[in-house]
Image (cartoon, rainbow, N blue to C red; front, side, top):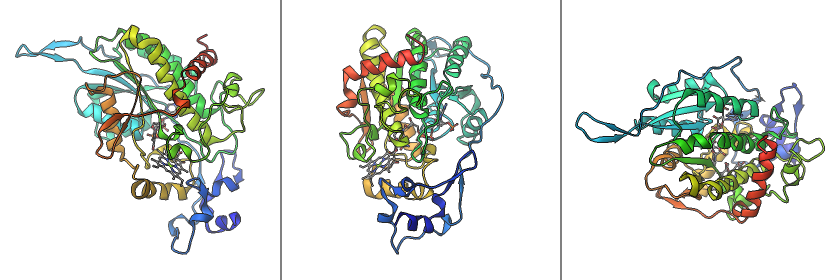
Length: 401
Ligand code: NDP
Ligand code: PMR
C-alpha cells in the first residue's frame, strides 16, 4: 500500500544535499496518519506530478555586518507641546525574515513605537522580506545571527552590546522543523539541529542579553520565547504522534551528539518531528525558569505563547508537498485552529507591547474571537523540577557553567 502511494505521489521523493535519492514509509504519513488513509478517488494532485523537491537552502555567504548603530533616546521625551511621550522601544526578534517573526516585526514597525532589530541568519532574505512587507528603513535594523552556532550567538550579543542600543524586549522566535529527516543533522557545536537551534541557541542568547534587558529603563521590559500547542500533551494537537517527551533528560545531558549519547533529549531514536516538539517544551520550561530566577529581582516580564496554527509559514518547508497543500485547509476548516501570518504577528506584537500583558510566567493563547488568555501548560511543560534540570544541563552545554 505504501508503495502504491509513492506511485501516485512522486512528489514525496526527496533529493538530499549529497544527491542521494531516498524514500521511506515515514514519508507517506500525512497529518500523522498514512497517506493511504487519505487518498481516494475524489482526491487528485495534478500540480504535484513530477515535482521533485530539492532541499537546498539559499544562503548568503560571506561576512555580514550589523547595520550602523544608533543610540536610543531616553524614556520620556518632551514634545513641543510640553507633553511627555514614551521613546521608541527597541526589540530584537530572532528569525524575523519570514512567518511569525516577519509579521510581528511589520506590526511593531508600523505602530511607529518600535525599532525592530531583525536577528537573522540570511541578511539578503531579511532585507528583501522587510522591503516587501513595506517596513520603512528607519524602523528596523538587520543583524546577523545564526542560532545553530554558539559562536554566532556570542558574536551577535557582542555586536548588539557594541551598538549601544537599549534592549527593551527580546523575542526568541526562530525555529526549524525537520519532520521528514531520516538522519539527524547537527549544529556547529555538534548538537542535534532542532534542539540545538530552537532551544540551546536561544538559551545562550537570552542569558547573554539578560543584563541588557535589566538595564533597560523602558516601562515594561520583556523576554518572550515562542512555544507551541504541539509541545503540550494536554491538548489534542499535542497528542498527535510523535508526542513531546523529555524523559529523564539523559540525551540532553549527553550533549545530543549521537556519539556516546542519543541525539534525542529522552535518549531515544532520532525523530525530527519529536525533536521539534521537545525543543518547544524546552522553550516553555526555559521561560518559566527565567521567571522563577529573575522576575522578582529584575522586573522583567517573561512570557511564552501559542500564536495559533500559522499553517502557511516556512516552518513546514521540509514537509512533503502533500502535507503543505492540505495542512492549511485542514487547519482552517477542520480544526479551526488556523491563523493568518498577519493575525499571528499582531498577537505576538501584543505580547511585546500591550500594557495589559505584563504578567510574568504566562503562556498566552487566543480564543476564537482573538482575545488573549492565560493558557494551561501540560504537566511536563510546567514541571518546575524538570525546568531546573534543563536549565542546568543547558548551561553546561552552551559553556555558561
Ligand atoms: P518560519 O520558518 O517562517 O520562520 C522561522 C524563522 O526562523 C525564519 O526566519 C528562519 O530563517 C529562522 N531560523 C531558522 N533557523 C535559524 C538559525 N539557525 N538562525 C537564525 N534564524 C533561524 O516559521 P514560523 O514563522 O512558523 O515559526 C516561528 C515560530 O513560531 C517558531 O518558534 C515556531 O516554533 C513557532 N510556531 C509556529 C507555528 C505555526 O503554525 N507555524 C505554531 C506554533 C508556534 P530563514 O528565513 O533564514 O530560514
Ligand atoms: Mg496538528 C485542534 C486541533 C489541532 C490544532 C490546533 C493543531 C495545530 N493540530 C490539531 C489537530 C491535529 N493535527 C490532528 C487531529 C492531526 C491528525 C490528523 C494533526 C496532525 C498534524 C501534523 C502531522 N498537526 C501538525 C502536524 C505537523 O507536522 C505540525 C507539527 O506538529 O509541527 C510540529 C502540526 C501542527 N498542528 C497544529 C500546529 C500549530 C502544528 C504546527 C506546528 C507547531 O507546533 O509549531
